[in-house]
Image (cartoon, rainbow over all chains, first blue to last red; front, side):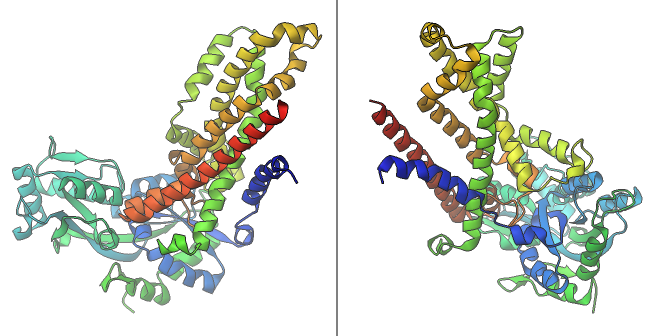
Length: 274
Length: 223
């Protein structure tokens, strides 16, 4: 066999190898599409939960992890079956406008204020989150804002509203990126940043960053589950989505959420006592 | 890193899906774009200049824009919503085909036009019409066109903006090399992200190397 023939055979072979269906079996299994946030996906929560759910029900869960704002858009267009997001007001509006059937509390954690270890604005001794942000404002210390209409970004804007200040200027940097990318950038420029605890705990590239302020009740971060409304979107897999909705708020789902930890730290606290 | 050294099955399926999506997109795009480019090269028609300019401009179509267009078309609320293709590998193939098609068509047009200027008298004297000349010209330009198709493949395998939007980066379903790299970067796992990037580069290099060798051998056989 000549080298030419060997090589002419190589390209089609490469194509053939690439065409071998990978997920043939999985594609036939029932599945639902869950639109959720980058914070839950990146914390490894779904990898911890979904296998248990799939084992119990035979339903595969496909997670599309985006910002909460984009997840709401997916919900309003009917492009998923169920949402798991964190912006109470937006969630309630989604249900009130008939896009979702109902909203249930699933879990919560909290937001924390991250910043360079040297803490130039001295936020770690502040009494409230409003005071901490005011100090950053007065010191004009670099602050990295998500700027992407995510749940965390919406929260940050609400907190600035509490201070009565409107941040702007060279020190306030709107990045328009996800939580992880924003943390990467904040680490590189020594900026303060508001982050959810889950992403922070699972984030690897901390460099000089540290959690500097936490514990204010305003920093509460609740997550809700909303199945999309089949009356509005007839193609939605309402029955399968409902099983997920029920399961994640059941004792089994809630216990699993509670025991998901990274290096001994709990990432999310289940909403229900059992 | 151990995940790469041990030939992790998850990594294997991500690599496989990347190749599957990008190669299919390049194949589909070339199927249309090679004849299309040749047709535009050989025929004069009103608005030809506009078509050529448009094709050339579309070579610079930002992947995220292509992704958004395909997203809005395939979304349940969009014109093709009833097929339920959003967040599937098929949607990713469509988006990348859209990105690759103008590159292959525009560059083919240029290559064939140059060749036609050189050979048109010969081909005419042989009595073959323009349409009949197309396969001959495409075959004669095959070495240049291989590079053209590889440029298209480079575009497809490198882009992240379109597949992220229309595929959703679903683990085990629509996660490919570039979206996995973006994900690991945002998790702050920069070494893993870089390692995945190197694997992607190596794969692209292997495919380009194979094509180069093929070109070398066929041109040697011609002599």
